[in-house]
Length: 199
Image 1 (cartoon, rainbow, N blue to C red):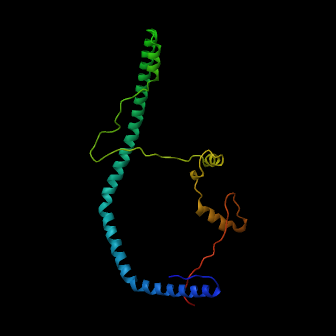
Image 2: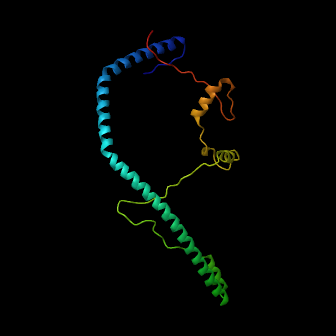
Image 3: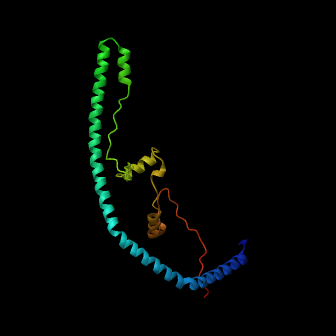
């Protein structure tokens, strides 16, 4: 449908069409209401039965995931500690080898030994179980929102690090009305058409 609203007459015509559309939509909704209600109730009942059937499995899964994650966290601390010890041992051995090379007059070899990165063996975090894996999930915690806001203001991190809480801002703007003022926020109104039934 091509229809342009360009003056009061076409605006009125568009308004009348919208009211007729709303009435037609209501007739369609009324026609399908019983079937929708019946289908919705059947769907709701089937979902409830599924929920009851799955409940013990979900409970067991949640418990085992929690216990497994706690174990992995504990194990990660142990692995980190072991890797730290192995790194210190490897670096000490590297320094000793470099000192021996220097004592034998092999300065370049000693330099090469010290410049070689220390490599550590891979230490498994958990036993290998078919169908079960582990992954590291990156987590963040904003513990000082003011410091984060300062970092954004100082252009040390992009502004995307802070999301505007539009719901809170709208709530404050409504509550304070014309007294609302906040740097970086412009309050404005957009007028739109609402459609109701005929009076």
